[in-house]
Length: 107
Figure 1: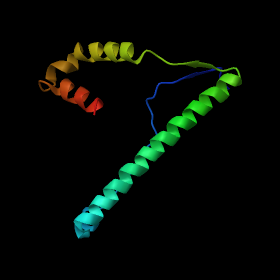
Figure 2: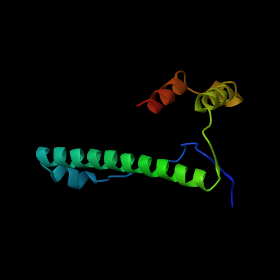
Figure 3: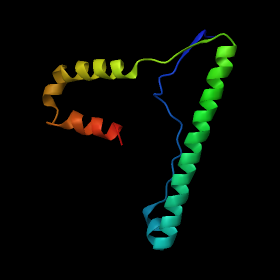
């Protein structure tokens, strides 16, 4: 079907842990801490497993003859940022908006 895979990292499987506010407020502080700790541990475990799976899959597909490409993300980011910052729409954005969005990406 394809002869290449580009590792864009634009879609990352994640765990979504959700507790409605009514339930959360009924938990004791110890229960909230335990739930939060377990959720973070689960997410960390998922990320480690996913990364290992991705590495294994890259090797598998390389062995099958597919070309695996890792793009220059920084060059792409610079190009996209420049494009949007010089667009007509950028004039209507609140001052510092892009800096705030970019700061979120590093958290």
